[in-house]
Image (cartoon, rainbow, N blue to C red; front, side):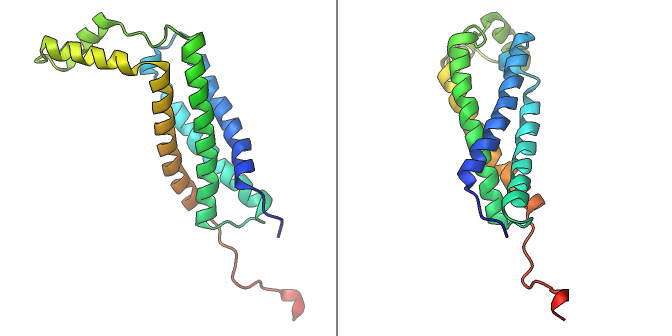
Length: 181
């Protein structure tokens, strides 16, 4: 059996690769003029996160553990990978929305009022003003990056559980040795 490798080192490597792809989705959608508040390409990030976590677990299992991995180790590997990717993406989002895409989080109040009226025609003017106030408060680089970190860590936990279930492969209790007969 090969020598075990640090999950943190492995997670940083694969989390770094994963975060690059997630960041590229953000940059490409911004450059193509997609509304950053209602980005239809967000699901691609979830798919990438899931696939990246599963790939990270498989690589760890096959490279460092001789093809076998327990559920707990698989979960840990995937979760560390996902958390580190989420942290890198969160830092990027803060910098991106603070210095590059400073206008991307601006709220079009007229469009928001129209949307609120369509979805809830009985909403009072006071409730609409309060909704706009809170939207402005939370659509800042800090809150967007914080919520991104929070949600991506949550998804990383779920995807790590699923990835561990898919990739776990327990080592046999007894090695069968046909040559010793």
